[in-house]
Image 1: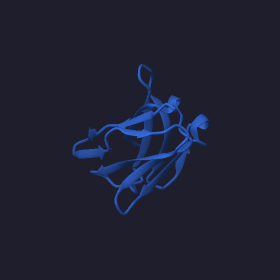
Image 2: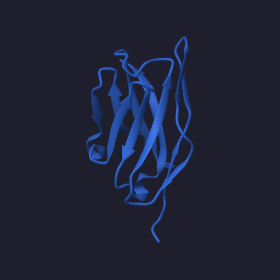
Image 3: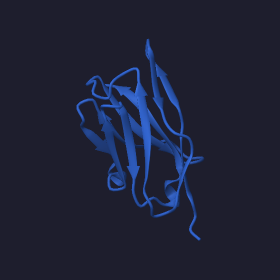
Image 4: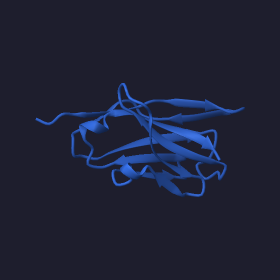
Length: 120
């Protein structure tokens, strides 16, 4: 029996003069070798606003934060070189939601996954 990869996502709230919320689901589990998609529902700004980029970051237990990648208001994406073949970031502008899809996940991908906004 293979080990289980547990991926947890948390609610993040950032405030810059008005309420900005990035809402993620609770804990998720995937069998090694499989794929998983985590969503991040954004409110308080638009994913198409060119003033912002929205990032995915992860933190394995007891380790430092690791940047995965980002999507900016223009739609441009960027990824950490070592993770660009494992993760894909997309956005749905009609629901103001961005998603992180991980493929061929392994136990080493077990972490808390965060979405976060950055002003450009």
